[in-house]
Length: 113
Length: 113
Image 1: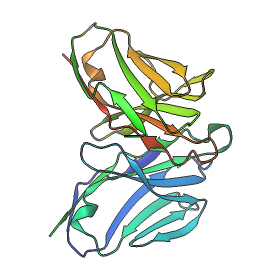
Image 2: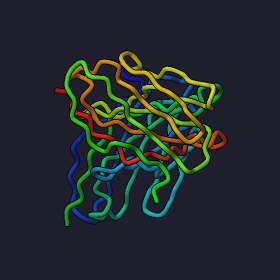
Image 3: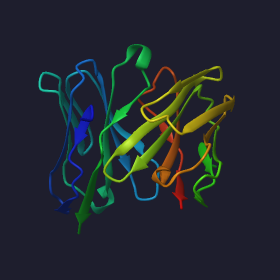
Image 4: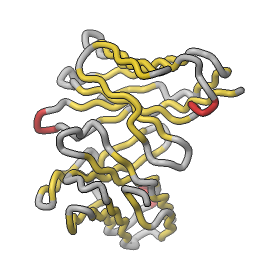
């Protein structure tokens, strides 16, 4: 079993919908949580970053971490066609392994007009 | 110009051939990484280097080797390519003070026949 599990989708939603993307993880040492976005034929780019449990909001995007249930979420409000991409959750334990990220499988999202 | 460049962008090779993928960065980061991406598996870490003299194996290093020629250059070699090494390969860099933010190159598509 992978340390980080992510539903690969694909997920298809109409423009304006609220999108929920989720990951679970098994290693309780993970304390850094990231969401990367990857457009087709491009490398991933960091979208959101959260340390430990809690919520973080950036415009239409909200990242949520619940360490008690080992659950990571990304919410996209008022989704746009330009949000169509693959979304990858990633985690890191910090300490001597800081920078050694563990990624989920990625969820392919399509937002249609 | 792109901060992280990879060459070649596409490569077709035959089983048993030796192949080298190259990565260069202009961000001045000490940390560099090599990942492979397969459909449904997300990104898997092959090797990482926290400075020129520090090289470490990742999750899936078997069949691969790396060379850190300078702070800005990190090469990945497949000594004897096999078909299940067909994948999309990404190089990434990060600042040691903010390694949750990794900057990815555009990727190299490798097909091993």
